[in-house]
Length: 73
Image (cartoon, rainbow, N blue to C red; front, side):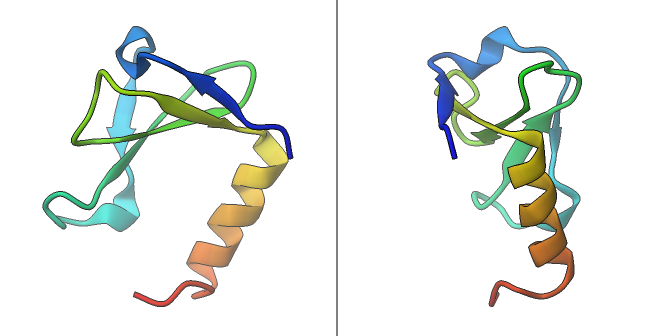
């Protein structure tokens, strides 16, 4: 898997908090929709920090694992 990063994630529009983050203070990720190269993900506590860009197939696999209970809380 190729890892791509954006140094300042605030340059991308339309960030939203993950629905799986619930109200966990300080333990949230955000994703940005509509980015053509993949799915940008950033730490909500650091909006001007970097974002990691996941390839669409890798992101789909990750979401399926989360929804299937593949990660312990």
